[in-house]
Length: 186
Image (cartoon, rainbow, N blue to C red):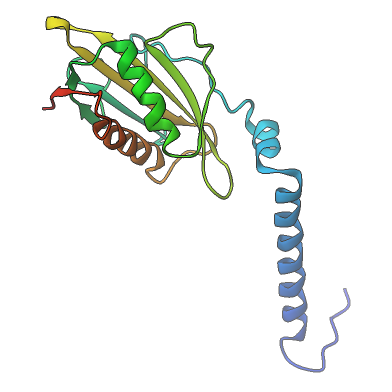
């Protein structure tokens, strides 16, 4: 094998680094030219991961999901314990629509047939990583309403806490809606 001829020490290394940087620049430009949504759909499938049955829900082994439930509403370990509400299930879910929309990054994807259920796809700001959020409200003892929220990432093994932060933001937004009356949180 021939040796690279250089007149100055490190010249060949500099060329390699410039080549790697140029290739990375072309790859990033291609990613955004094609579009993150198309890339993720090709790499991981549809952004909407389909409905969740909260009664049969099994949390993921990878740390890329978050679960928030009113006390006793979920059988899996939760990340956030939610209050119960005096608001009816249908009215609570309608308020959830407002809370999800307030994020500016929610797309409702359920079929709309169940007034006590919603499913949204949220996307991260720059790379548009898709996450699916399912929400169900159910009547519990004393005519109160329990809320269950489950958010999960489509891409990657970790989410850097994005799903939990999203649930926390939605719960805070729900608390600011006058029609939503929380009862307890333990």
